[in-house]
Image 1 (cartoon, rainbow, N blue to C red):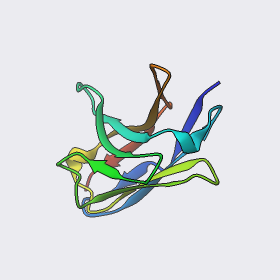
Image 2: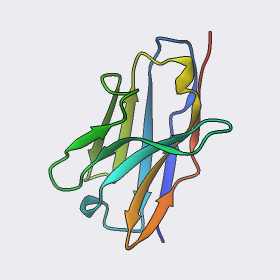
Image 3: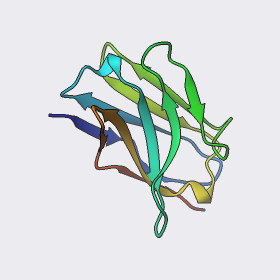
Image 4: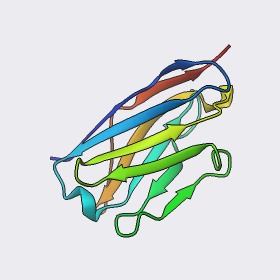
Amino acid sequence: QVQLVESGGGQVRPGGALRLSCAASGFDFSNYAMGWFRQAPGKERELVAQISSVDGATWYANDVKGRFTISRDNAKNLVYLQMNRLKPEDTAVYSCGCYIQRVNYWGQGTQVTVSP
C-alpha cells in the first residue's frame, strides 16, 4: 500500500530555515509527480510545491516562490522541501502527497511553526 512519511518539521524563528523529507513506499515512486501541501489551522489544505516525475520540472505557489525548493531522489524514494526565509504565515502542518490511479494520497504531516 502507498505510504508517505514526513519528517523534519519543528519550530524556527522568522527568517530561519527547515528541510522537510518525505519517504515514499508502496508504489513506483519515479513514475509519479510529488507535491508538498500545507494546512494551517482553520484553513484548507493547499499545494505549495510540486515536482514532476519525468524531467524534474517544478511548480511553486506564489507566496513560497523564491524561498522554497522542492527536490527528489528517485534512487531513495525521497522528496524534499527546503524552506528558507520562513515567515510566521508559513506555520502549518506540511504533508507530501501524490495522485495515483485517481486517488489522492497524503502522509500524516509534520508541524512547522515559525515564531519569534
